[in-house]
Image (cartoon, rainbow, N blue to C red; front, side, top):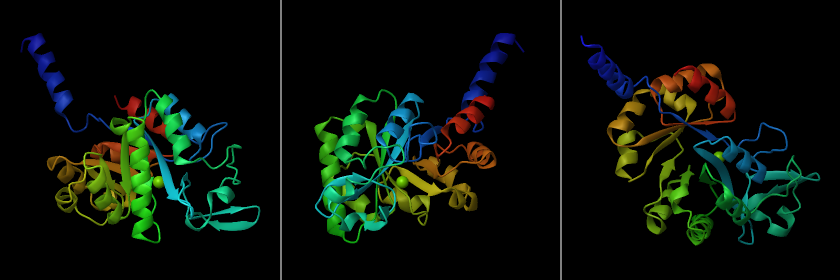
Length: 259
Ligand code: MG
């Protein structure tokens, strides 16, 4: 075979082969396993951006007085006092200090910092609240903030609750939205008009065929939280679209080593 034709065929095979990974990295709660950072801090967003990750994930709650704030858990203990985030006013939540010295950020502050980011997208997780009203208010506030800053093309949404995905479909129908809860097969997710699945690692290990099913349906696959070398390799072999991780440097290294 002519050498040039062989090279062209080899290139085409390489591009089309499922083992040629296009997997991208999302920093789980930003990039926080580094000096000066903390989970869901502004610094974690800046550091995720500096690594040029595809995305930096963040968790949002609505305070009792209607301020969108950044925190992972439903509760947080501050000075020995256990606070339920959605039942606590912003003034009190603001006294919470993250492990890197930052105060608990608001969604406004987070998005203002995100405007300055050059590389990463923001993957916004809406946390499940006690009432559908709270969830609608939080979604509307955040979508308004995103629109006001012209960030529509740089933001994606994720949620465990179907209510959020329905609200998003009402008020931001073009926004990419992913389902987290792991209990819907790809065809159901497709029928809901979502962008894809964002499932726990163990769900994808149990149903590895869902990756190809999603791709065949035009859906994307994100997997969380993939931190161990063995799991990273398994997910890369499956050709998932996104790996959400606390270890973005390790995932980067493994992706590079497989090229
Ligand atoms: Mg999250």
